Amino acid sequence: MTDLNWPLMMNNISRSDLDSLISYLKTDDPKLTQGPMVKTFEANWSKWLGVKHSVMVNSGSSANDLTMIALKEMFGPGEVIVPPLTWVSDISAVLRAGLKPVFVDIDRESLALDPNLILKALSSRTKAVFITHVLGFNGLTDKLLSELKEREIVLVEDVCESHGAKHNGRKVGTFGWASNFSFYYAHHMTTIEGGVISTDNADLYDLLLMLRSHGMVRESSRVFTRKKFASDYPDLNPDFIFAHATHNMRSTELNAVLGIEQLKRLDQNIVKRNKNFDKFLSVLDPSIFQTIFRNEGCSNYALVLILLDPNINLRNDIENCLSELQIEFRRGLSGGGNQLRQPYLKKFSGIPPAKDYPQVEHIHNFSWYIGNYPDLPENQIIKLGEVVNTIGRKYAH
Image (cartoon, rainbow, N blue to C red; front, side):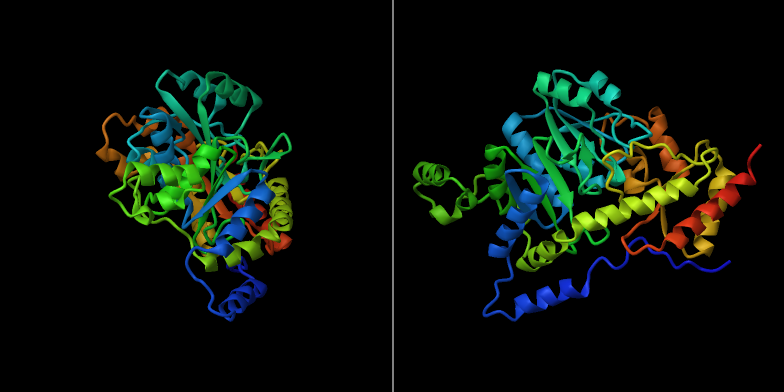
C-alpha cells in the first residue's frame, strides 16, 4: 500500500506571506512589539467578522484567559457551562478565573454542547455559557440564543477551530458577549502563534485592552478612565497604574503583518476546505461511519471520522492502517477527547466522572480527525475513504 504522507497541516504559509514579513523588516526602523500593524489587523479582522471591536493577543489560550477574567470582573463569581469536548485552555481559563465549570454533554451532529442539555443546566448561579464551535461546525440554535437572551445569561463563543462558520447566514463569533479565535499554525489562518477576542460590548473592549497589558490603565481607550484613576491614585505615576491583576498577553507586529496577509485569502480557503470535507463524507460508508452532521454554515477544519457503533478492534485496525499509510491523525477530535479524563481536572473537587457523558465518551474512544487544507488532492481524499470503508466492511454483520 502506497504511503500517502499526509500531515495534519501543510502549505499554510505562502511565499507572499514570508515576503510581506521581509518587506516590513526592511522598512526604516520597523517596530516589532505591539503597535500600528496590530491595530490594522484588529480593524481588518473586525470588519471581516462583523463586530465593532477586536483585541489581538498572543494566543487563543490567552484569549480564553482574558475573557474569563473579564467575565469574573464584570459579573462576579459563579458557574460557567462548558463542554467536555474542547481544548484544555477553555476549562482551565474558567478555573483560573475562580469560576466553576459545569459540564454538559454534546450533540453528535454538531459536536458542540447539546442545546437542550444546556437549558436544563441553567440556574441562578450561571454567569455564562462557554460554547465551542468544534472543527468548523456551528454549535448555535435559535432556541438557545433566545433563551440566553431572555435570561440575560452571557454567551461566550470559542471559534478557534471554526473561522467563518455561520448560523443563519451570519458568522459565529458575532452572537456572543465575547468570541475567541486562535491563529495557531494549523488553523484556518495563522499568525504562527496568536489569537483575538472580538465583541460589540464597549465596556468589555476597554477592559480587555487593560487586561492584555499587565492591567495597565494607560492602555484604556477612554480618557475618562485614565483621568479617574490618575485622580484616585495621585501618588502613582499615571503611566504605571495597574488596575487589574494580569500579565502580558500582547501580540507582535510580525504576527499582525502575517495575519493581514492571511486574512486576504481566508474566504477562498474556507470554500476549498468545505469542498474537501463534502467529498470525504460522500465516499464514506454511512452504515459504518457517521456522515450526518450540521453541515449548513460549516467552515471545515479537519476531516472527521466517527464510528457509528463502538468497536475496539475496528478502531485499532483503522489506526494501524492510518499509521502505515503515514496519515497523521488525532483520536478523540478536539483536545484529545473527553477533558474529564485529563489529569489536570483530578486536582479539583466536584468534577464529575467522565462516564456520565456518553456522547463525548463515544467521541473520545471512536473518532479521529485528519488534516484538511486547501491544497489537499481529491484523489487522496477518495483513497482514504475507500481504505477505511474496506476495513470497516470486514466487521459488517
